[in-house]
Image (cartoon, rainbow, N blue to C red; front, side, top):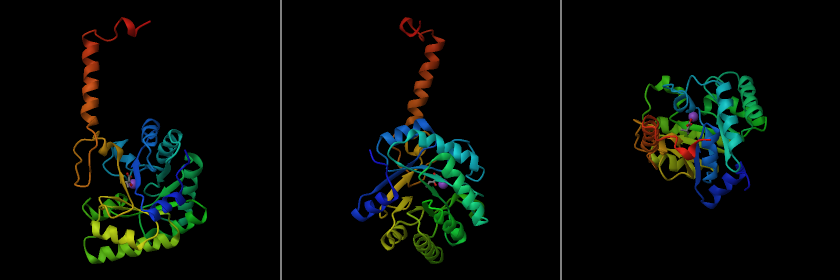
Amino acid sequence: TRKVTTHRLIEMKQKGEKISMLTAYDYTMAQIVDGAGMDVILVGDSASNTMAGNVTTLPITLDQMIYHGKSVVRGVKRAMVVVDMPFGSYQGNPLEGLASAIRIMKESHADALKLEGGEEIIESVQKILSAGIPIMGHLGLMPQSINKYGTYTVRAKDDFEAEKLVRDAHLLEEAGCFAIVLEKIPAALAQRVANELTIPIIGIGAGGGVDGQVLVVQDMLGMSKGFSPKFLRRYADLHTVMTDAIGQYITDVKSRDFPNENEQY
Ligand code: KIV
Ligand code: NA
């Protein structure tokens, strides 16, 4: 099993092979996701929500992202592992951005990093790329900017926002990013970006006209409750499976059914 590389992803786009991407934040889940044959595993800063129970992605720290990144890398043989740079670690001084990027790469052994934004962060993007660190861009709905927008609704619905997004996508490609995530934007706009760019466009809530798809693993496995955006397809109901299994264990302990004679020394 050869590791998936940035070159392989660009080749997949050229051949019209769709790219599969899913999040993971820990060793056990990473082994399962990699073993299933995923192309890219994202150690998303959505760990702030799924792992730590925060309302937004803003509180997660660089040290915490490194911990999740390390844990995932240890469980992966084939997939490319991309780690999100957390809020506050790259939006200011590009040299600070580079220092944060180098820490993640050195300490987690990830393959690449993902940053939210276009023109506003282009100097950090250039600085990090100049160190030989591959970058995946992220445009459209950018959860690290939630306080600027106030909602998680569909982005770039008007021409002004749409044209800025297209410009930003080109800017990121010209800077040397190897792929871009487009989150929650109209399908037609996402398809236009995928057609205009050479690098792969990975969508979440961005329709089928892009080069690949990404979801949050707890959402697609049905582990999380009460999050049902239109773009989410649930492939399992693990919430029910796990609740039933745990409930059965409780029953067996209380009834003295567990452990039985074969389950002791
Ligand atoms: O953090 C995350 O899970 C993400 C994906 C939704 C793209 O950035
Ligand atoms: Na993210």
